[in-house]
Image (tube, rainbow, N blue to C red):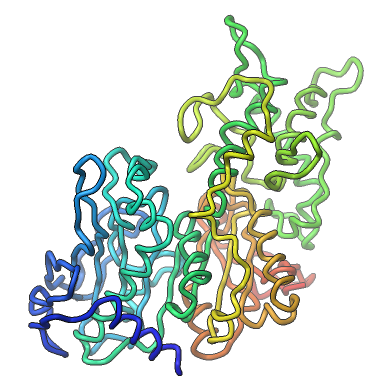
Length: 515
């Protein structure tokens, strides 16, 4: 049975139609009368062409084409403490003569809790999915954030946590496809999911738990093991730094003063000297990070040296932090981090050599020791962790899966995503077989989901669509970025990297090859 037909049957089981007032091929306003068990359509309005997208994440400020926006709630209920829960969603439907016949869902971020505008602007270059003719959906994953993007208070309600962990996206996808089929009088031909951070984790979950829901999935900087990564940035790394940081009048370490700005520049200059030209050109970006064997010890002050160097104890602390946490038995608990050019940036998330006194979730610890074994014991949460590598149904059904990760991501180590990808290869017949349906792209200089001294503007949506619908596997994806105006480079599928061919303009991607 074809994948699309199997999913249509699944939709029918999830959402039996009791009384469909809106008929196939009906108008936008008619969708407000659509009656489906467990679903409330709260609004269905026509949005004119040229309207700007309200500020949201992912941020997109351009105009969109005319479309129908449908909003609603799935399974509204009273939960713990009498609080109202339900899976909020939004669906944007292009005008009927502009629909390309396909559906895309965009992932969330942080703790979700917000319905971002369903424009499909994530990693789609300068042309959002909605503008390309996709029907696009988004969801809050089952709760409303009251205290910002990192409000996880909803976890006290079990069903809300289950929705966030894995259920909500599948439910919204099923419902959205039902509405799409009603509005256009035919089902979507292909379905795609694109997300970064929590959205990346959601994409992985969908490939593992709902392997026939999407034909193509793009996973960026996945929040894959948040219990471990949060401890890495909030505890393990600060504890290492505290052992060398200057103390205040109360004897408490001051992480922000571990390095001076001059020492950070010294560090980056030495790193670039060692690794920048590995790709054939010295241009401020390290495009061959896995072969960058940089040792900060080269910067250690020698006996009597006080300038243009870093104190040996500080160097030792940095090496310990970047190596990642190990327990008392020497076992690696969470991967280390790459030495990359974005480690000294201040925004959007401070690089690992630019930590202030406050972290993502409050002040950093001032402790100088840590029980790694105990911390690791409580870090795992199998409910939300997308650890399975058994993707035989997904891949066997023709599914395609693209990963990308910023090399300077200070929150979720790119090496963790790389480790998962290697495990995926080992569990599915080796690299040669897996590359037929999955690829990984490392993005030099990029912080968490964007930013940093990087080329962080690229079109993964076209890459996944061409792979699914045309069989064109993405060997590379062209990237540009505001940090380097006028420059383009190919992001190459692992294990290859962009290498200058020795002739032509070094600012132009066409003069680089994947090697």
